[in-house]
Length: 437
Image 1: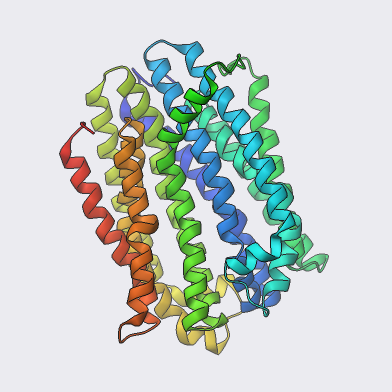
Image 2: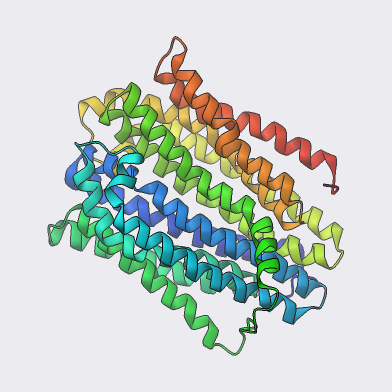
């Protein structure tokens, strides 16, 4: 696809469909696992897998750091006619991904139990969390490289292949989840094995792109490696924080919930966090659709087209936000029933937790889209700050202060909505400041 001359609306629709499809299927990995394990082991199963979710975020966010960070510069170089220099970003991203995935996977497998307890697993659920992690941990490098390859392949003009690859892995994961968890009676261990196999297959499909004649990505000598890596990290830090912050938030929530509540509240929150992952995957899709169009046209000096795609992105997120918020407000009990066998204890607290937390969906889409936009036009500092605001700068104080107020644990469910509200004020202020950093 010609990112400089094709109508912006046509480009955005094509990239949006592909990016939302890819992001949505990625969320299915954790969603289907929690549904199956929640039905098999009850609320304890859902709570156990909620403790593993932050680890997914670490590997996927690193893939976005290297993939989107490098792909932005590659697109800018291509927009300016410097194709060979753009390929260097691809090579450096690959090398950095190999090192990071190897080190983190080995370290995680050696200290798996300690990591899971740090993320909120107690004696009641640690066995289920360990059983799941035993099989999924070896496949975590595939989650990193899945995000990395998707970013580069999408910017190389083949977004539909990304969707096809992730869909293949996702569908396989669904069938294997049902077969291994229930038919083979493996429970949480079967869910972990299914996820590992599904993601490995998705990466194999992505690798097939490099055999195509239409592939313009080339392996060249990685000169100026450290300089290029620093540029990648600077540009990719915002989407890295966007994704990592969700895992960070889940970890903080898990520990605060177990401090003020019980595993029942943790199971209900685990359900809502995965519903949020599913809905927010569409917001990530909007940002990922915006990025290659904005970056390439920004590099070519086509500012009118950049503004046009930003307007489309913000309009799309607004429609999505209202829709997702309404779904949670109207059907919280039905959503809980999808993820687990709902006990009276869960039913007593679950709907309230979901309705309060879902207010954040009205604002998170704008924050994510603005962060991607700022990063796409090399306003990296502003993009990082928006991401940090919703990931820790506002969230951490609210998580620790709100439960101390008279409403107690109920304050936890308002921490994310208040955080997104404060962040959107920062994001809008940056947009109004214009293109200067």
